[in-house]
Image (tube, rainbow, N blue to C red; front, side, top):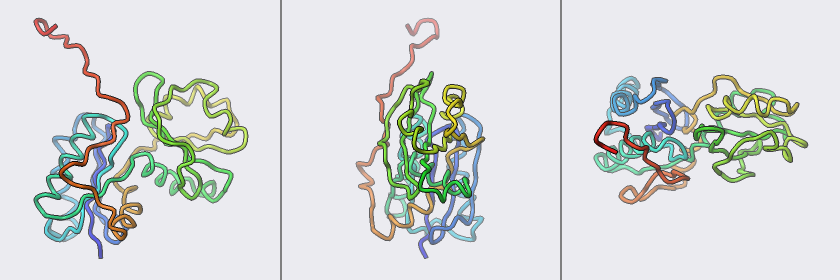
Length: 235
């Protein structure tokens, strides 16, 4: 029975779940922005203890690797690495958009059974830009992860032939731009969750698809650009 701690901090959501053989048995989540550093260790302790386990019982740690928030990803990956080093267990990384697409498929009911449906998770990347990818009904990545500026022509080729289900905080801000398309479907209040890592990570654990814990880095997609300090004397 594989017992895996799953960590999702790629957006404003801080989410930690414990899965046993691919099934989530305990989860803690917060939607408060900038709370990751404060909550992630406490959430990890709660989900493990709440399942009647100790950290020494864990078989692996998985982490959402991005793309997403630079700070959120750093906190999640650093925490996951710390657990793996301390417990001498493997680190498994999951693409954030792939995990989101898996969750979207689970929540989309009958539409998910159609081969005429694509899933488009979106993460807000400021202004009208999003991190996004397209996934088929069987979770194959049919359009690779990219940072994309959304306009009224976005996905027009795919929307002419497929229904596309959009989800995530990036989709919410793009709804007005794409809502005129009859094949565009928007999932309300969908957010990344550590629960969506569990199915993917179970297979990776069985296949021993582990990361090199010492050298693994998040997938930022874009370089981090620091803002100009606005405190007097720092410009």
